[in-house]
Image 1 (cartoon, one colour):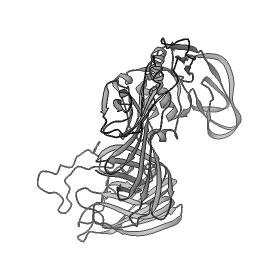
Image 2 (cartoon, rainbow, N blue to C red):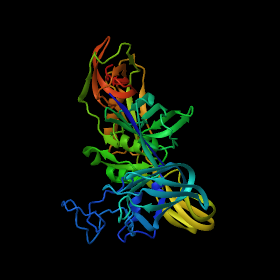
Image 3 (cartoon, rainbow, N blue to C red):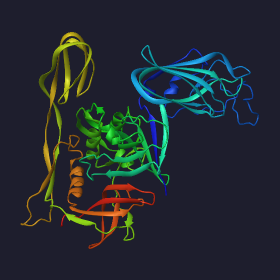
Image 4 (cartoon, one colour):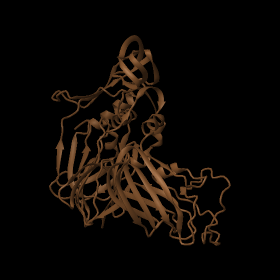
Amino acid sequence: MSIKITYKDIDPTAKSDSTVTTTNKQSFVNLNELKEDEGVRVNKYATLEDNYWILDESFLEFPDVIGNNKMGYVSSSMSDEDGDFSTPVVLTRTFTQNHTSVGVTFEFSQYGDYCPLLNIKWYRDSELLADEDYTANSNICFCQKNVRIFNKMVITFYKTSIPRRYIRIQKIDDGIIRTFNETELKNILITEDIVEDSSSLPINTLKFELSNQTSTDYIFQRSQPFEVKYNENLLGLYYISNAVRKSKKEFEIEAVDYIGLLDKTYFVGGIYNNSSVETILNSLFADEKITYTISQSLRAKTLSGYLPYTTKREALKQIAFAICGIVDSSRDDTIRIYELSDVVESEIDESKVFVGGHIETGDKITGVSVVEHNYVTTQNTVELFNGSISGNTVIVFDEPIHSLTISNGTIVGSGANYAIINGNGVVTLSGKTYQDMQRVIEKNNPLITSLDIPNVKSFNNYTLVTSLNSQEVVNNVYDACIKNISINADFILSTEKVGDEVSILTEFEGEKEGRLVSLDMKLKNSNIVAKGVIVSGGADI
């Protein structure tokens, strides 16, 4: 049994913010390839470098047209018979913003040659912050240097490990990837949650304590990723939200899943009319560095209605609620959007369950109501902005707007929730409003008595619910809300995950079946002990 947390101690934005320049490169080189997260894996193309073209038929003929064949960086200069460059090769990386990292990792050619001697200078504008020489003995070289708030880097390569070779670089990372094991980790806790009707979108979290067993310093920066594995099985991908240094070698780390990151970024939203779910999601995830998957049945749906200018987490919740789907990233390196299944995925038997669990019965739901929305254009004109500007300015609206007009300026771009305007002086922006024509859709519990206190749960502000999907939505939230039994149990986790339909053997009510909606998992070397919540019940409870 083993626990492993892999930490990308890398500035998550530096690479995409960088611009690489050099006068020493082959004509086919595209320096933007050094900005790619996954790096480049170059084919074994035959060249006339010394002892490079091995006649074992593994080398390919160099293409006449590069096309989509990624080559990474290849210098135009070749080293001499001693592996030295008569004029050192220089790469300059400039950044539009300031960055901080613990050093730089270079990935040279995977075919064995690398640069054994190089120098790096870090700058903040014209100020030299650090100047260090480095030696390498493999194709992956980490040049350690804790440098804060830099925006320029000058890298000088002096040699190649094999004479008469070009320098080949496949990848540059501002930092290093580290792996921590059970000797360095303690008090590891992972929480996973879902809400069956997606009326809220929980954030999964990771917490642990780290004892640094090396002399290496760490710079824990927000949004850097942790990959958690247990016996090589992925338990999730998490991103730093908080780090506390308790001593020179002791840290307390808190991290969130990608849904937590989506709570920090914004989506422009808009008015939708039979728009495909996939089109809306592609727009939402366009600037994100994580992929999403969606089940075929949900992908085929269309949506109408309105999304305000809001966080991407909130927008994703609105979409999931409207299509009756679940959004989750548990045990995965992607966001999954799918429909729940009522098929029992796992049986938690008495050999796995600890004593001391309990069962709670909540208030009986007598019905649910969902507000249906219909946004209709009006001729009501409102003033959206009146003030002095210089250059481009972004104006965000509190409500959806159409038919924008502007005086003493230009509308550069716009949507239902925003406008980018340009002007030099006092500018007035106006537009026309929409009216939200609302209707309430209800579903009542047929199994109520005169003794039952009315308890209707309402869902009002889900603005992608229209006449096209309101009946499906109200049925979905009703099925979730009538489950008023919560089974709380501690058990040894096997393959169970939130969202699964499971059966569990309870101490005093025998076998119960329900939806696993919450897990608090403590990771230990021998096993994973989970505190789970399973919801069950029906209209007659």
